[in-house]
Image 1: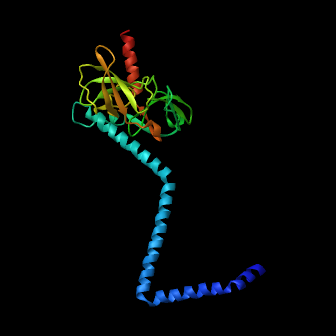
Image 2 (image 1 turned 120 degrees about the vertical axis):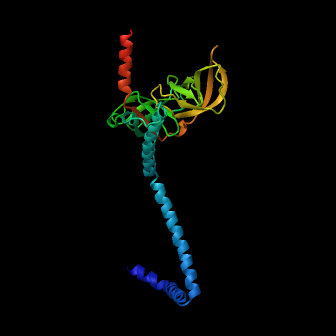
Length: 278
């Protein structure tokens, strides 16, 4: 306490100056219209700048929650979009029935591990069997195809990435009825893949879009990429087409695990048909 008193006594002139200066400044501002207006405008600029910075920090801290909300909204929109894709494949113009409308269920998951530079690449997500994830389910993003669920634990799952030599996806070329098989093959670049078994009489042009056909695990109509290079001969009757993938595997954050609610029924019927004709 004694030291504080000595400090105040020693610098009393400075404190008196600050006090009188503040009082005089307040008197000037209160009694002069121009000075009062200038002071208010200046204070608004300072306070506005402060709140702008504060809101920027709040927005930054809330990015994780915002991303989760956007991912949830994207899942709901994708489910609605899939209804229209299914409806568009019908012979009539009527909307698909309630069974077809609710055929797919999308589960949001966060990527916790991802490899892209190996010969066989895998992805780990933070959703498992407790969230309804099962082995063999397809995995997509808002931009394209990711891979297939390989192994599942209660809270995590591993995905066999599209960047894996054993991953195959049935695809179709835009504006044609031609089907092919998408594979990463022996590629080493995560930006590209190959569409194989395209009949060599088909005119494939650079820039054509590639979509899932619906004949594999993935829902129909998902854009996978665009044709980058044509004319790669794979045999006497077939061509390979190099495509640029839409999915950016080097920047995967959120993915959607797709559950086809009619898959088991379809598989049982096909197995029964094979057994009857065997």
